[in-house]
Image 1 (cartoon, protein in one colour):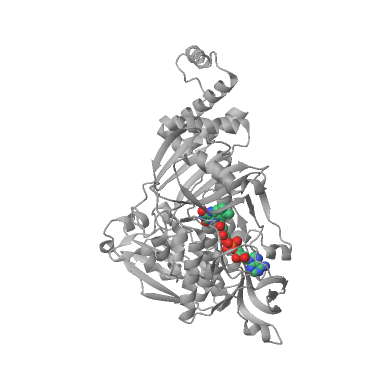
Image 2: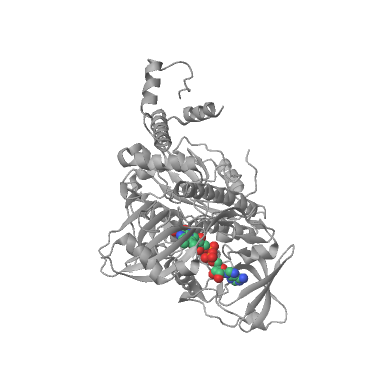
Length: 62
Length: 544
Ligand SMILES: Cc1cc2nc3c(=O)[nH]c(=O)nc-3n(C[C@H](O)[C@H](O)[C@H](O)COP(=O)(O)OP(=O)(O)OC[C@H]3O[C@@H](n4cnc5c(N)ncnc54)[C@H](O)[C@@H]3O)c2cc1C
């Protein structure tokens, strides 16, 4: 079982951040909320490991 | 004075005067069951098969009109099979495997259940509840004809009970006036509104869902309608509500459930023209059908704090109620009876301590909580309770259209599967490196044998199942006889027995309870340890 990575892990953080904002360009709040929800689900499925997901959930609420 | 609360589908036990009504002193019975619904009748079957006298009291004269439950799951059918009435159900019921999921105006995906091979019974069947009840009553009549001490008394309404330390006094009203009997044990199977709970002042707590459902059973006139289950989230047809479900029952009858919200005018909604307006919007103008039955229901997810109050024991909807999503009502009630029957039998016959009945409470509360959790999850998916929960729900549906990964998250009801009594004090520690699905506490999964199926070989006694292992043919401990069922690789033509019961282990010995749940398992027979496991399984020894 792997652990939740909380150290820098993304190649080109600025690029990712820009891409993340770009998908929301020109969207209504409602559309953006829907996109975010889909994104979370896609990423969660990619991770899969339930211990890692639980750890991520608890990091997010802190 | 004695009006029916509902119309009958089958008149099965018309009122007859009982000899008990002409006695000066109340007659004492070992077991009285209050309520002749499916769970009360199943209780009578279980006890009657053990030769324990049982009297069922019901305030009607037969099976209620209208199909409430339609989906009966594998374990429920296996229990019915143990009672001798599974096969007619299987013959009558409809099996479907193809389901379609719609969101608003689009089909998002379809699925095939691809059932696991190697079981006598399918994952579930669809069948109107009155048939389910009727088949059990037919078997009750068969048992009576063979001399089983079962009585069922129609139009006998329990009005008042007086619970004493060693018995319960029961006041009954009949069309010919009142009488009183006594019972060593009273089993409350009097349904979700349980008057018995009220008489004893016992709580029923949980969540009420502020929603109502309009159900219509319709008969297709020239039906070449497919045998599939269709579920719509946010259906597009006019005033359909938050969800709609369509699935097939026997006799060309289809069940349609419209979720129509909380503030509805029941009388208005139930007018045939209004139901037809909804149905026509859904089915299109060309589908011809007749109305068979309709009703509006609301539901709750609630349970009693304890299912036992001294000499009174509750089972079925009286003890717990769940939402219909996932078909857990009758299915879990049958598991209550499965669990209670042998325990009560042993206690009545003086072979087990009274405290064994407390484990009925522990194990079935565990089951009820699992059912309530599952049905609450389904309800939260179908009717999101907050903006964010709706956003995620819609995101799942959206993704499921193109991506397989999201489909398992779509929750329009999870089929009832038997609960595993993990952590039950009746289990012995797992001593076999075997498959998880047959660990102590599990209901035995079926498997095909050379001649028939495994569960039919287990029957309803304590059994020692040996697979490629030596053991005595019978074993007696404290008056309980354990029968050996000896199997080996050659009885296992498909390899499914080995896959389900051995895994990587070369041999196994299972001690199996009369309700076909695993009490203990080990790689080989050990007289001392098996006896210890048996004593533990009947509540005579604490787990070490
Ligand atoms: C719309 C709907 C759909 C459902 N679908 C499913 C499904 O697909 N699968 C599933 O497993 N379950 C389903 N259920 C649940 C299922 O119908 C119930 O769980 C089941 O009927 C419970 O059986 P019971 O014997 O505990 O109670 P009941 O069937 O309610 O029987 C109680 C009996 O007690 C009698 N009684 C009451 N008071 C007295 C008294 N004072 N004296 C004597 N007798 C009395 C009543 O007349 C009745 O005969 C559904 C329910 C509904 C409403």
